[in-house]
Structure formats: structure tokens, C-alpha cells
Image (cartoon, rainbow, N blue to C red; front, side):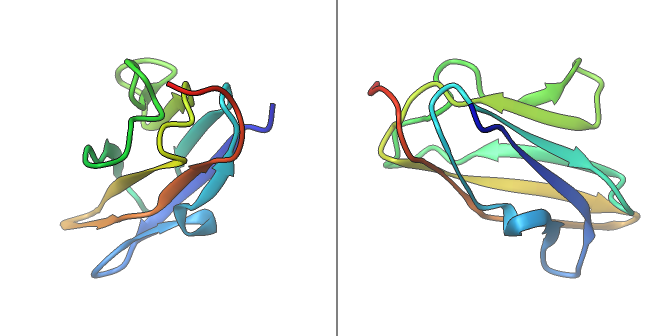
Length: 111
């Protein structure tokens, strides 16, 4: 298993600052975690439903380790269509931004 952790460290006027630009290649069974660091006062993860089959299955990313946590985590359940577009939202003071990276699934089973 090769789990992936992103740091969401702040905001610019038009995007969230995310380590590795928010993009990663993972395997089925891996978890992906987004940690709120730096000047970001809050973060959120939104899965973009569209033509992609959902790699998260019935359990999309959520606050982790509990519902009031500032960090988010999801476990990759399926290859889907090979990846998932998602949005990282962040707030820094009165500035809210978002960033639209992609998680690619390299190996594993099918949905």
C-alpha cells in the first residue's frame, strides 16, 4: 500500500496551495489524506460526479479522524475509469478559493 498525503497550506486569489499540486497516482486500497496546514483556516474536498466512475465507492472523502476534524481522508475503493477529478476548497481569512486536481488509480480491481 502506498498512501498519499497532501498539505493544503494556504490560498492565493484564485487557487488553494496544495502539495504536489493535488495530483497523485494511487492504488485500490490506498487512502488519500488532505491536511490543513499554514494559513488555511478551513478546507473541503468535493468529488466531481460526471463521466468518471467514482473511485471512492459509497464512502467519499470526509473529515478525518472525526466529523469535526480539519483534515480530510478517503480510501480508494475502485479503479473507476482510471481516476477521479475532485475539487479542494480552502478559506484563508475572507478569501475563499478552490483547486481542481486529479487522483489517478494505477492498479487494482474494477467496479
